[in-house]
Image 1: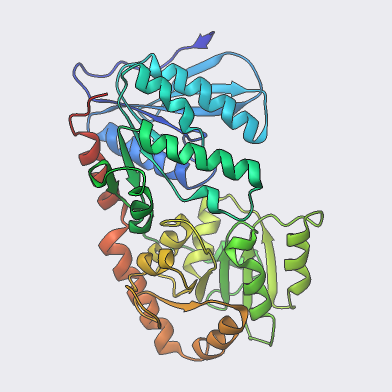
Image 2: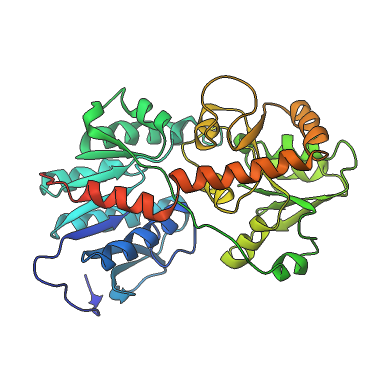
Length: 387
């Protein structure tokens, strides 16, 4: 294995952590990358030596370098898509198994490879993410793969992290409660951001709802667009995400859209996305499955009034407790009809919108700030783990 080396040595006796399962830092992709960036920088400031494995496109030598005090192992992979991720995870796990320190694996999609860490007696904590094999978008083979790796991860990991109480309960079917710790996802608090990025997209601050989700059936995008488009609303629905005419579901969403729906495309510029969140009248969250969804937590950090699909995952994040009815930091819908009726009432009720925004800030400060989340992770990582 050829490598290009760079970086500085850690102080003697520094605790060592290797983070696997992401495409690397700085974050340029999803929630796990954002979390890895925050955790790595936090721990480095606290005296840890942290290494993050990252996937690069193409071929060539591995690169060992440093970014803001974080050691990086950048592994080029010629394969693309899921096959490339599997190859990358295999190479990263093999390298970690031959290296000192504690491992934190983000996601269980290739938990089978964690057997290498067990055999090498390298302690490994696994963030088990959501219940991936239950997602409707996967075919039978993919669901079988995820189901197998969820069960293998529950057994091969020295400890499991659940990002939601419902995920912890689910994992408790295959692992003892003492082996599971619940720590949610975190987000940044947003305030005082300029409105120029919003205006550049043709939107008026405070005169649009935001919908930030992958265009998949389990995220209720079609139902949201249908409900919003049933009648004139006097404001816009700003939809983020890549929609392709070759995809039947994407076509159906576009066909259902009325003139007040704006498809903004996939936007990865963080300041633009943050401005869109902060200046929206409300955020619509249609996710039906999963644990603590990063997009929902980010909406709370922006102080958004939240309109959420009614399920046990969203209700806990929004502090709604058990039972029916609107409570906590959100109001809820279970169908396009219900959302249509909810929008009719809520958009004409400024005091209710203001109360939801205040509740969102309160819920965020109580449970989802980065200092709260990262301190919980460090406390867990500092336990005397034995492989």
